[in-house]
Image (cartoon, rainbow, N blue to C red; front, side):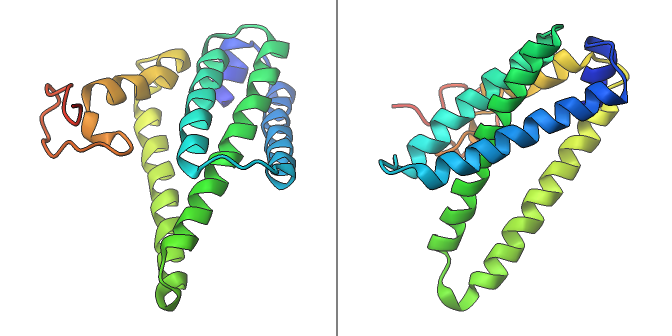
Length: 168
C-alpha cells in the first residue's frame, strides 16, 4: 500500500494514512455486518464470495489513479478481509477438538503470520522489477497455473501444466 500511495496516487504520508484508515473503516463495517447478519450463508459461500470481492477490490486499488475510487475499494477490501478472517478463525475453532483447541489456534495464527511475512518478502523482492499493479495481479497467475493451491482442489500433482487437475 505505501507504493500505491506514493507511485500511483502521487501522495505522501497523509494519503497512506487515509488509505489505512479506509481499510480499517471497512473492517469495522464488516464486523458490524457480521454481528447483524441473521440469514447467515454457509462458510463456503462466504469464503467464495468474499474472495472474489476482495480480489476485485485489490485489482481496482492496483489500477486506480483516483483517490476516492481507491478509498472506496479499500473499504470494500477491508470488509471482505475481515469477513474472511472471521470465517477462517471460527472454522478452525469449530473443527479443532476441545483438548487441543489452544494448540491448534496457536498453530493457525503462526501459519497465518508466517504466510503474510513470506508474501511480503516475495513481493518486496519483486518490487524493484515490477510495479505494484502487477504485484497485485500475481495471485491470479498462481491460481491459474498452480491448481493444487486452490481451495478444495483434488489435485495431487505438483506439475504447473496440469491446469485441469481436480475437475470432473
